[in-house]
Image 1 (spheres, helix red, strand yellow):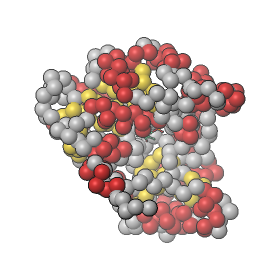
Image 2 (cartoon, rainbow, N blue to C red; image 1 turned 60 degrees about the horizontal axis):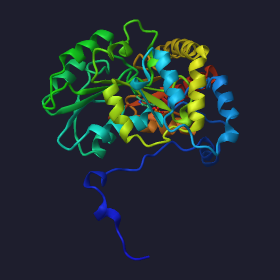
Image 3 (cartoon, helix red, strand yellow; image 1 turned 90 degrees about the vertical axis):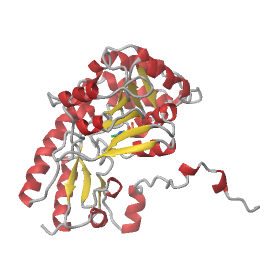
Image 4 (cartoon, rainbow, N blue to C red; image 1 turned 30 degrees about the vertical axis):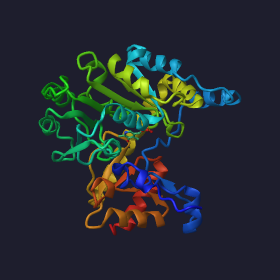
Length: 376
Ligand SMILES: *Cc1c(COP(=O)(O)O)cnc(C)c1O
């Protein structure tokens, strides 16, 4: 092949990107480590699995795969709108809410825009900001690993195009209350574009946090705050991470512009069918939420006995201190014990790991192994 380096052609802001490294498949690890049994409690997946109705709906259309999906996901959008008593023009769907984060960035962010993000928040926003060569403004958290919404509002100026909030936050499991959130919306200054900044409230774990009476009802706020975008997903409590489907709720004007740049057919046929069926299954949310709350009680009681520090969580995962050890070290040692968790270096939390709530059996195994690895 002729000498050719694509480097000179790549946009400068994209040169420092690294490929996303996902966890190794369980089967590969089993072979490499010579282990018979490995559990994965690393990606905030719901071990109870999806609604049976969703599985059936996806199976039922397998032989229709030769048809393109509905490019507009009309039936799914209608189901989501109905679920929240909104209109279809308030709804956008994406190949996971992850895709929507990137589409929002592509639509709105330019190099002269400032985007406000919290430290230790979900990392995908930084990537989206970098992709568009916009300026990221990182605000430290309050004590207890909570988004400091007052400081985030103060960090906004004439150049602020958008603010990202993860509520509840991944990886800390903490949340901002309804009062904090609405005070924040009110406090935002008008920017040089003559509007308030766009506020993206990423609520991937909303259903898990919904038992908290003071958790914000952002759907209600959409009327009053047309600059608000709420992101939710079928990947977490609905246990459809493999199907890739998430959605955004906002004012018709924001949805209209997002629709114009959304790739057609971005949500596949199976994801659309599975998501619609999931919404019809009222038991999916309650059984998963009940499981997680019960397991948190169990795990935290044990961790307290062992003197291990953790951050209380309203999600389906928690952040745990492994100090004086490094999270990376503990991740490796746990791997050799057959338990996959997550180190938190990419979140600058070097002495922490994040653990997803598994089945009772998985949680018991986790506790047994963490005790061994931390010499407790
Ligand atoms: C998992 C997660 C997402 C992405 O979810 P998908 O819909 O699967 O793309 C978005 N935000 C947060 C905070 C998450 O934890």
